Length: 195
Image (cartoon, rainbow, N blue to C red; front, top):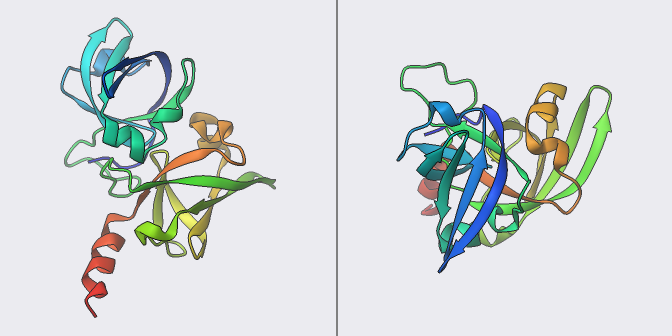
């Protein structure tokens, strides 16, 4: 379980393919605090640490993860948003995030506004995910509030701190992002589908 509050940016050092799996070696300031078998969210994707070497650690993504997320677009030297699993009993600064990406979306517009940035995203309607204005959404692992909600799309406003300390500074029009929709909203939607 995560909160969507990014702790650090990691740098992809190597990408190794093994059969249908991909091993990502990441360099991060968090590495000394990690242990093998620990969960870490990478752009919102929960992956397990399988090895640690100095300030670098390795995680493995399986075929399904690669197909359902933007991890397959990563290149060596790319930055990723990192968050360790939440500590039970600690303050929940973001919202409840599972680290299970529902689908990818695409940035359709990026606009600098007076003191913030507005990002618009679109997503494939086939999976029937929904957003609501002032509801929660996770984009590349970042817990955000939906500003505008439209059919198969939404916008978010990014403050300068979030812009500088996450990979939002690297997102441009047509960038593919990972989306995890609000878990409570997903349960409500499932319960009401029968009616």
